[in-house]
Amino acid sequence: MSKKVPNRILLTEDRMPKQWYNVRADMPEQHEPYINPATMKPAEFEDLTPIFAEELCKQEVTLERYVDIPDEVLEYYKKYRPSPLIRAYNLEKLLDTPARIYYKYEGNNTSGSHKLNSAIAQVYYNKKQGIERITTETGAGQWGTALSMACAYFNMPLRVYMVRISYDQKPYRKEVMKTYGADVFPSPSNTTEIGRSILAKDPENTGSLGTAISEAIEMALNTPNTRYSLGSVLNQVLLHQSIIGIESKMQLEMVDEYPDYVIGCAGGGSNLGGLMSAFMQDKLTGKANPHFIAVEPSACPSFTRGKYAYDYCDVGRITPLAKMYTLGSDFIPASIHAGGLRYHGMSPTLSKLYHDGYIDEARAVGQKDVFDAAVLFAKYEAILPAPESSHAIRAALDVALECKERGEAKTILFGLTGNGNFDLGAYASYNRGEMENYSPSDEEIQKGLSNLK
Image (cartoon, rainbow, N blue to C red; front, side):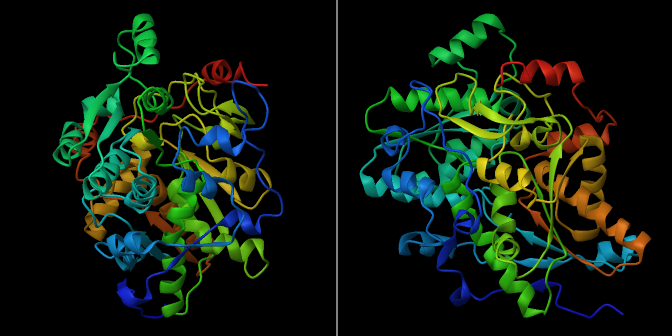
């Protein structure tokens, strides 16, 4: 008989974590250094400061285990944190599984996702340094929305390059950004050299996160007292997002639980890295051995079909190179609705953890199967999930059924990164029966990997 715990496990405000956790402090080996594209030598601290605020550059390279959360950031966090941990009793009953399913819900803010955790921190450090404006990219729009909220709070002008296919598919998301004062452009655009060059070759180019990153960085480097802000991939972002995993661990301890499985969707790595942080610390230090699963779209399978190699983080090849799992910076993923997962590469830290076996497995799932899970979840858990989050839902359902087959009463934790209130176009496509699973051919994958060494 499964023990009865509250449906919603809540932390009080006074118990909210006061420090972020840096997983790199406990890794036996660090990821390979970033490479300066101009010199093709390891990037120095000074190579990063024209792009990011100095304090964020320090966080990018630090091996300090814990970093204090600034008081100003903590005060903002209290508007929507601590976020709830929820027991999915209805799903357990539907699946008739002995597994216990929990999810950490990060959608209780206007951005609709976990992205605000890093956005408010990044803008704070830029403002503190005296930076006057910020540029960024966004895929599905959650990061752009979160950063527009943070910039509005700190009175910081923001320019957002939104991947063109998402710009067209999610018109209301860009209106939220504009409401908070951001300037939003579809990427590729005619406002940058890299955008114009791409459009000259392919006027109908649907864009990619790699292209939007190039445009945002180009604009930042060419505009006085401006810095670029990234919502995933980087160590600084994983650091800020660690609050998700720290809270999750505290909440599970309140009901005497510990996850056998930790499951997160994986695009650039911000959600997965944040959710697994405190549990990965236990694994790295030998205290526990949870099974980590990264879930990515079959249309953009960097973990499952990519190569562990040095690659550019953007299409324009102006960012430092990173050693990561990648499909190649020239790879343009299909126009799936999970725009936040359409990135050719993966966090260098998560790539290293996966390569070394600490992240146990990666699964690639098709978007039709993902939306089957999303609709089921919406009906039984009363939350309309974002397409990105629904990748984790798909895997959690599958693992729960695997536990049923084996008769194992395991504990499953997955990250519900956000809500799907701005993704109704995707749900409309699903409801019309137009959504299909898609995987690139081996030839398409090889084409993207052909320039890697």
